[in-house]
Length: 105
Image (cartoon, rainbow, N blue to C red):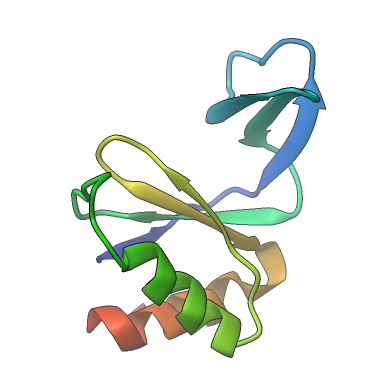
């Protein structure tokens, strides 16, 4: 999986328009969710190219993090998956992910 921890925290907000530095946007019936540099969440990107059709990767990740008591929001891009975990637990998340990826944080 080769998880990569990004240096800056991110936030999730509902906005009318995404700022230029937005990482991702999700349009829902209730409004536009924007993920951008902010507070509260660490972004961990999986450096391997993942397939949108892959079965079980998200389940393995969320199960491993859940067992460690770490909440996780997964955003899938075309090439990579991005995990958002609570900022204070980011290093714990990297350690937990190492147990299933064989990588060391």
